[in-house]
Image 1 (spheres, rainbow, N blue to C red):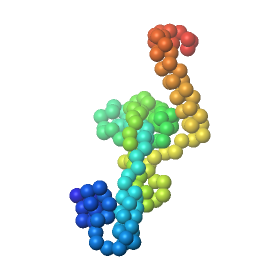
Image 2: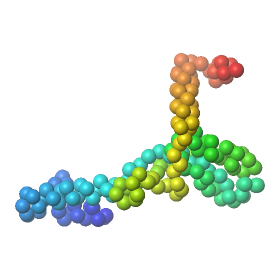
Image 3: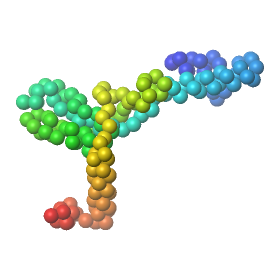
Length: 154
């Protein structure tokens, strides 16, 4: 059991309300303190995009490693272009980063690497790609085939 759960087990009833003998003010202070501790230690999560490369760029016989962790997919794609084995593009995956308010420096997100913020150009490109993906999805929902969509693009 973690520290917060231990405190709750001793100080609170099954519904999480302070249930010790003391003044109402004491109970209120304990309740507020538990809430503040829990909020500070409860990790927030967000989606990040990871560009994966290989430690051996010649033959790909090394181990997989993180090249970049980004807030937007297009940033990961941009940074991973031509940066994997024999100049191929990095594999891009969606992962989860966490932060602990009040524990790590304000606004710092943790993943096994630094999370790279997008440029203004990345944000514009991501918006454009999202709109394109949405339009393609709508076209498929309306019964267009992959060949129909390809024909429209050329």
